[in-house]
Image 1 (tube, rainbow, N blue to C red):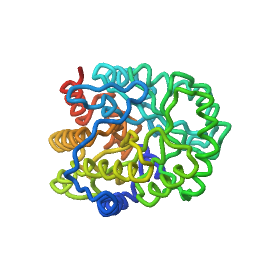
Image 2: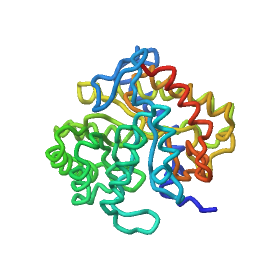
Image 3: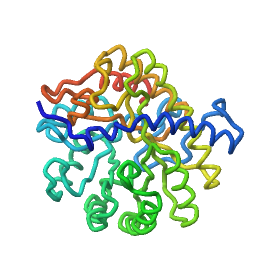
Length: 345
């Protein structure tokens, strides 16, 4: 049985304890800036992103997304037609796909055929593209991806958890201010999103930096894993916390930039530790957790959210929507499918 490498599948998760600190920091920071607590009225997304719709009760269609990350199994979301058809038939909407300049498996440079495979996976799944330009220092590759994809991908995140990769906010901002204007010229329709982090200090410094440079993001994204090897009952109690977190981030954006921006949770799940607790395989638990999390994000006016992940053998398969051994949907797939049926119009 293949092992999951520690960079991407995921054990970025070894630092998920920081999400708890991040949440607590935001509670204090946002309330002190605005004088508003968790009773602040939720707001609809300030503007629609390319491909986004509003469904029943003004819930964003893009709440029902997933991730296509590095593939650690030969059978995966990019190679399995049944998985792609299942996503399409359930009307999943947004696929966050990682445009690595080099494979994490063998370090070979990414080819156009591999870029094409990621784009076709999204199209065959009936979904909208959210691309991740993972290496923010490889400007030739990033500009090539945006040029190659053209109108097939109009949403991009700049980097992925840069703070965890040891990239300082000053360095990230330098790359952002240099590359984002160039990428916008290549695809004027595209929307560019940052800073893709779970670190409050990094987020706040990023907002201050783009305010100064005037190279503003089109949306703000962060990552949220509610639990860190907590017992199941405690983990369920954390499922609604993303509502308060999103509201506090919105308040921070408004306080810093003086305007509203769409907010997205581009990675989320119950527990991203490696391996995740076994209760994630329990259908009753994951169905309840997923419903509570989606409801909380909807009430907070979150514009997009991508469950981690589709099928890459993440967390030794415990985080996948599909079993990579037999292509069959796992309980979280059915939980999200039911919610889509509830809200889709």
